[in-house]
Image 1 (cartoon, rainbow, N blue to C red):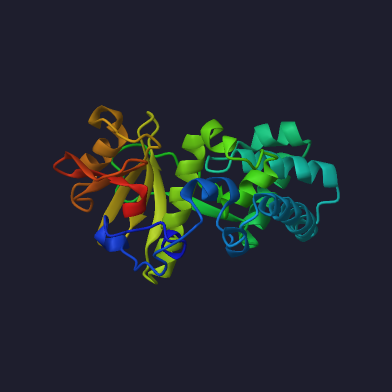
Image 2: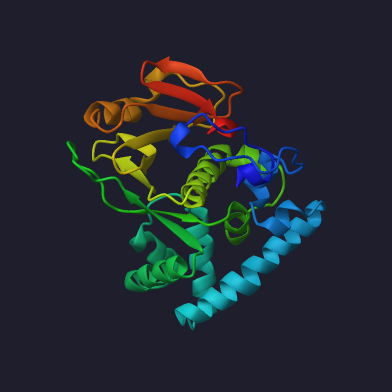
Length: 270
């Protein structure tokens, strides 16, 4: 987690506060977007060794061991499925599209996702459905458990240029994974969900704390205008009884009050 790599100052969202255990880290946030957060990667100073380790991990463990677990006899088709699934990590999978492009039937694709979930290679994020006042889309989202592994499986270049090429995707992925890990580390019965309506309103993360929920939008910009937060504002209006405050996680330097009930927070202050 960010508190373990010296990147977090925390405290911006009281319910998710976690004590920082490392105050002086050498592993940067941008490096984490490319190479992920596996401990062996974060402590490896040589960039070329990081890339080689991730490529080997993706090929030897994920492609071979997980393929054996899935009993996938067609190595090429399973490898293509993994590459496409990694490329679309963070979204809701289109089974028919994946089937057509990988040459594997849609039911088999669904089974592959189940195996990846069972072996902890992907995180399943469910939609928030409690007391819905609008029609909510119910297909879950999937996130590969580590950004470096995701990037390696997607056959992306493991270089700093990747951050600029996929800044929004990588930033959202990193924040969602941090929130999932944070909830587990706090040892509380929190769930990370998302919210998306049939007419396009969306909130990237909804942390369900039980008696209350924390809606969190994720924007890779340094500053965000209130007009860009239609989904977050709609959620706060619909769920005002359990969601008193919403947040926007940005790549800015300081917190900013965007409305009485919406605060923009730099990622390191979550």
